Length: 243
Image 1 (cartoon, rainbow, N blue to C red):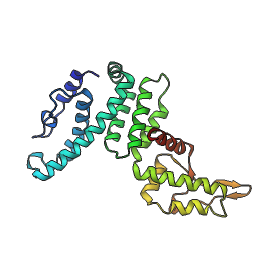
Image 2: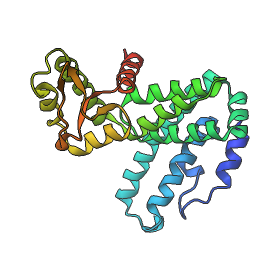
Image 3: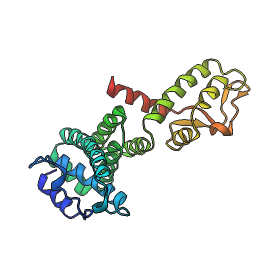
């Protein structure tokens, strides 16, 4: 993507009073990825600060807010730079101009990367999106991965890894009521389990454990009966990018 194109997009964006692009960086000639990351983070900041009014923001609060924005921009720039390096800047520009599906994926994945403190997630997101940008096949699976990782962050990923260990042990010894798995599931807060269920990384419902023996669906663990193949693949791929 050319720098001039990104500057044109940014200049056409209405910023909150008192907050300007030029004030966001001391670099007189930033990379286009830095400019794009600033634009994406500023769009969210504008919504956040609209009811507060930037000019009246307390000095200490403004410093904290600027620090948060700088960290988000650094993550966004890293995400975009990896994808641009893999795809090529001009090719990437052509893709996002002509392919709405891939353009939306780039936008949503950059936002997800900016909002995450999980390094493996950010690295994996960048690789998934870079692959989608150059693939000649449908990108349904890549879209599902980006959507799932938009729901899941560090606490959810760590919980899923623990649940997989319990699931593996439970499959070897299901007992009379999946005691190993259920004990592990009950360790995790309900919102964690709900996010795992929404993103499709766990199985739900009664399952046959052996001839005539079926698992019992428990409401307090959202009837989760193990980690789905999608969830297992996600964990493996997340581990591979930080190994």
